[in-house]
Length: 259
Image (cartoon, rainbow, N blue to C red; front, side, top):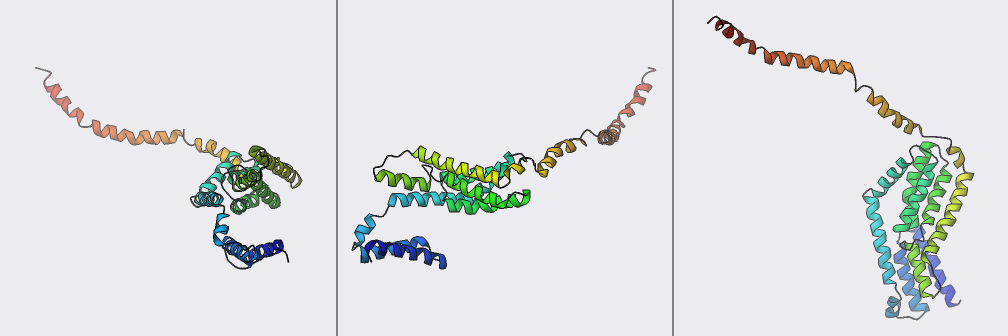
């Protein structure tokens, strides 16, 4: 067995062990790297540590930590609610909202599986509530996450751009990002058409109709004349009660008039 197969087999074993057992895959990768480097490649510890991408590790750790904070403090849920309100009851816009939210998350800091794991339950809840095809909603979230995955400041984009730059190949970060976004957008558009998206364009959320009618119905009882009349009735005895002691000075003025 050559050195290449002896390096691939520990990698496959790492995925199997991390799937079967609750062990962090990164820890297994460190163990596998030192085992392969020591017994297969004949490297010492200093040479193996020198090949560790410290700058890339720091980028991944910082971005993942920032995304975890945004998830725990409710920022992502707030963003989803604001975006869904922006469609104003147009059900056909909800799948596209999920597409673009997943794209935004992966373009700034999130790993694609993490963004899908967070957005997919919310999207499927909206699908069940508004009668949207759940398969279409799930695929829109997945392709949205892949659409923004090659942003220059994302994890995948940063890894890809650094590897290409080290290889001395020509690179355009903006072209890579737009190509990934364009391909996934076209695929999402085809899925939207094939999985019932055109039917959603003829529907509207009944809840939005109720919300639009609510201000009109709530404004009706405000100019109620009976309420104003009741207020004037209650104010009348207060005025009369205050004005009752004032006529007591009238007899004095009458007695002094003959003089």
